[in-house]
Length: 152
Image 1 (cartoon, helix red, strand yellow):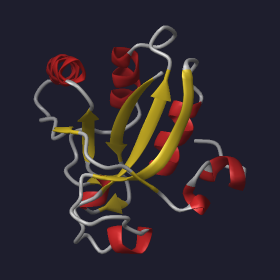
Image 2 (spheres, one colour; image 1 turned 180 degrees about the horizontal axis):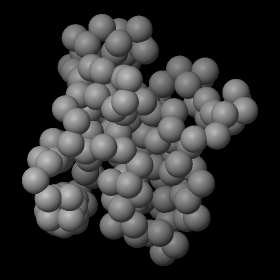
Image 3 (cartoon, one colour; image 1 turned 135 degrees about the vertical axis):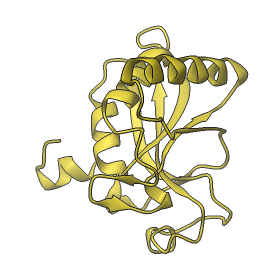
């Protein structure tokens, strides 16, 4: 298994979409990229922790490639809106790719360039950052849509 981590707005929909992908063992909602340990949802929502709402994806690279996951990431959110997705506003909702190794970094950078060419003049604001600690979100955030009977 391999790991990938993405921030693309509220983690509920991101987690839901990645969990539907063949080859994804588990997508888990959490927080990363910030300056405090073990943040809570309430702390992250203050917009002072620098954490993003992220999804950690545990996947089988023999079934689904990292590049395939990147394509899903690009299609499931608007990478041109700074610190917001739809009605959700704040740095925790930023568009971000957190890479775990140099190969992921290179693939992410190439993917961003391809996506930028495809969308034209609207500037992509997605950050590409080395993965740091992942803090699993509270249990009530895990599989939120499934628990509440909501499709996305």
